[in-house]
Image (cartoon, rainbow over the protein chains, first blue to last red):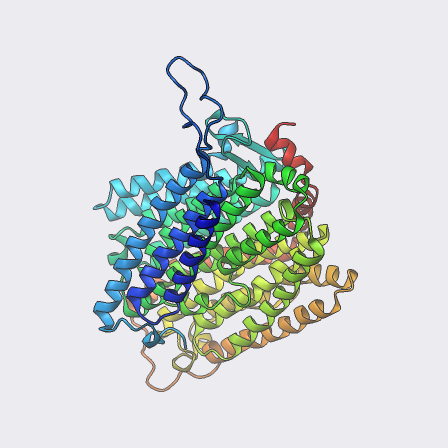
Length: 115
Length: 497
């Protein structure tokens, strides 16, 4: 399972870097989205993928039944997903605004602030 | 008084919320924001005195013991950083009151500014890596909106570059956090410092360290990851670029110093030598980039990059004296660089432009402004007796002691080139005659100049003070560096062992 997920993470990273290097704004957005997916999936994979009891204490007990899964990676990923969702929404609006102003979605034409 | 550690986060947060509640009352927002930054300044002073007297302070959020809960830690390094951020926040807030246009003010400038300060203070005080990621996102998100606020075309374009590269850096940071968690099973920095050496997987940890080096390197704008900085910092209003220039890259430097003194110290012969090489290259490329520029704020932006090189040079040397030099340099640089950006705003108000070609003759009309430029400019270049001289002296001295002649030589030469750049600004903006057809100064603009010059003068005085009275800050940085190099006190404070 880990092996397969590792391949998926690698493919996601490769795809996102490819998209980030394209001059199109739409591809930039998709690339940023894939990049955060890749990081989240990486967190999930290295946090150990296990098929054990859920980390919830049964009624009346003080602790979950051993062996139980580690809930921390999911909590981290959840936080990261929420953050990346918000930031991506902002980036989309920013790029749309830029498209409205300049009439192009070609990032190579954005050289105004470079010199 | 354990709550003292929470106040640097609570004050900006509550100020931001209050400013949002009074969204339609601009004058109330202005007073609230000023009050908030004043309160933050007072708290930061109290925090630093407390840490100096009583040693490292730590508080566990929600009273969960250390490796499980989220820890806030204030050692000398972080409390110095919080204090200097609060000073800058206060000065820039004063400047904003006189400078910010009403459109931006009524569209949330003050709440955003306070959220930014909260993110900055949070990153300095957290003792948990994932929590640091979250604080980074807090400060990044508010900086994204601040840089784009107003929506001018150049701003939007600069913002796209800024947002994209910072998002990539955040994703790398997150990946590094994940890998480190997979390796050590903890994200508390003190706990990591204990567990990483026990793992024995030195090479894996070093590989992970490089992920962090790249992630924080993008934020700190080191060679070759700095291209977003000069493409974006000159686009927003001056008050915004000033606070960005002062604080944001330094958060990256802080994070680098924190993780590379506490966690990734297993293979210093590789990682820290790499940092030393990067620092030399950063100094050179930054200063050479500045030579080619003809816009006031772009010149200053490139100088941020070259100065970042000095700051991580002390980390690369990895001795108490080297780190002390770095800390001294960071404090000096934050004050001086913010001040130079603020001066550029005052010059723009007098001369109507940031382009060196369109400016001139400021010295004749505004000798005070010219003098106030000269103080931070000479300090940046490292002229005695200003703060920059002692900052450079301590770094270069330690470089020579450790026989790192190349990087010390580079640091010396870059100092000269910085002086050249500053003299270029001096000549073009202040000394040469005003170009024909330059816009004459209107009465309204002249009136508001006093409000701009007051914070500039305040920071200039501080620069002179840090130069003439360098011993106090030097003693403080030395002690902070000792705490960084010998983290046993830090570990004891956090883990209660």
